[in-house]
Length: 319
Image 1 (cartoon, rainbow, N blue to C red):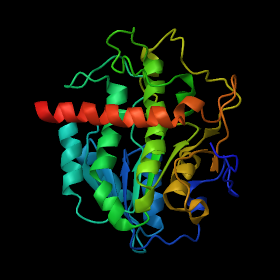
Image 2 (tube, rainbow, N blue to C red; image 1 turned 90 degrees about the horizontal axis):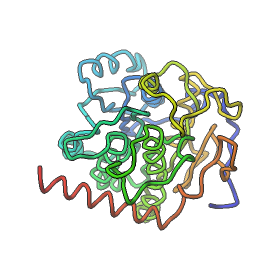
Image 3 (cartoon, helix red, strand yellow; image 1 turned 180 degrees about the vertical axis):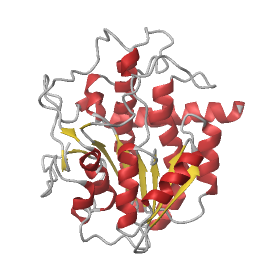
């Protein structure tokens, strides 16, 4: 990790709209996964308000179309439209990516699930890893040509402070040997989000594609935590009383995503991890902030990239 951390005038209480004050995104195309609710919806709304043409990838198309209508600006050039995208279904991901035919300037990998009971995709993949990482990995690599054509694209991966709880279990990613723990699986998937940005940032630098990860903070009033009530006595569960976690409303929670997606203040930054609108320092034990060393490990990042390609390749040949 660089010793020269990127700082901005913004912080934990800054809203997404404040981050893009005065920024003109006219002519830019953006995709936001999970854009029908929570911080994804706010991210899409603010990007469109700044002039971008935004596509929200949604599992429920009817609901997504309604949201797109609600958040499309009534004035200015920005637009919002909804397209079907189920990140846990590789056929859906491939179809979405194949249908995209224009240069892509902004890709916000926002959708996710958290601490779900054990569930597997049709390939046998553990659902949190399959959704939070593999679905987004397939989407980003499938849109790589479109982003390269933009000459200055940005990819934003929404991770979590939960990544500090554990590395990727390379010997048992799908929890076939280890006892399944919902929080361990979540931590693995969120570490994978950061490792993706490390390797993608390295691979795609010559094509001017910047790739960064972020922790949005603890957001009130979103559906992400809807499964937590199903979980008790998990050894890796989060402490909701922690005082070093930034609690935010949705407008504040989307701010770091929007910063990395479109602010000139982070121009050229890639392969980095941000929180509260600033680049995070190293994680310190006992503090729920910062980025863990295992999530920035370039060897682990390269290994995960190959493992992900292998898993997707195996799925494609059996589809």
